[in-house]
Amino acid sequence: MSSSRFAPTSAVDRLVLPLDVPTVDDARALVSATKGTVGVYKIGMELQFAGGLEFARELAADGHKIFLDVKLHDIDNTITQAVRNVAKMGMTFMTIHAYPKTMRAAVKAITEDGVEDLCLLGVTVLTSMSEGDLLDAGYKGPISDVVEDRAKDARACGMGGIVCAATESASMRKVLGDELVIVTPGIRPTGSAAGDQQRIMTPADAIIAGSDYLVVGRPISKADNPRKAAEAIVQEIEAAL
Ligand code: C5P
Image 1 (cartoon, rainbow, N blue to C red):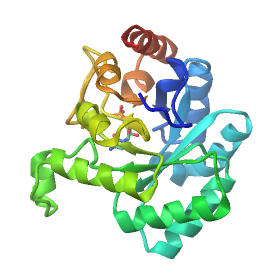
Image 2 (image 1 turned 180 degrees about the horizontal axis):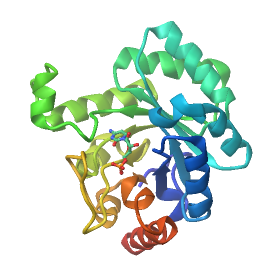
Image 3 (image 1 turned 45 degrees about the vertical axis):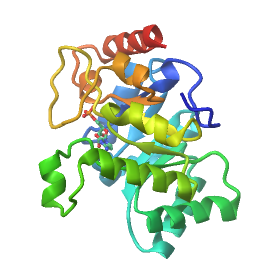
Image 4 (image 1 turned 30 degrees about the vertical axis):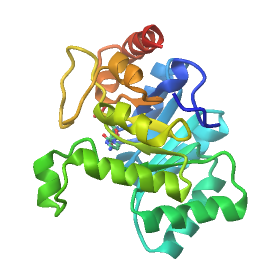
């Protein structure tokens, strides 16, 4: 587990629920159905393009921890200015693609403005990518090598943490030490559908492997009872700690 100031302090804290739904009304319903059983709500691209940024501000103002999953990658000036504005929105986490130049531009905003409460996360390799997908994109190494290089770059650039598959958490914890937080999507409780995720793990195994935060989406949002599904995952996390 990480010793960073962004490290979770309880089992509930560790559960991140993506609000991957089409409308703010749907997101509002999911938040009220899961209130108190989830530590962080993640707002990704689907909702961002449907009023999700205003909703993110509203949730943060209500005291929720919000993870803005923007996966930024652009020229330095645009990245620095974008991170400045996200920090002003009261977000707790945000994602940047783990290219060194992009991460340096993001960290510049944090250090120049003295921002202390926004954790920048470097996205190493998306958990939906297989070795074949990486080859198609022009990367020769096995996924584990690319993830390791990007994790080292994230640390060198001064990022707050990384996003990687739980199957990579144990080796990334060795590479990173306990300075950075490790956030892992692709979590599937036993018996739930993998969907488009490729490198999956159960919540308990992910915790044992060294993940700090677990992003669990469809197994909660598509469950008949999202609150019960979230509570069961928190219990599994608690038992693994
Ligand atoms: O529904 P599911 O549990 O697969 O949702 C995973 C969430 O984590 C999605 O919001 C997805 O965009 C996000 N994510 C991911 N892999 C990454 C980074 C983010 O699956 N490497």
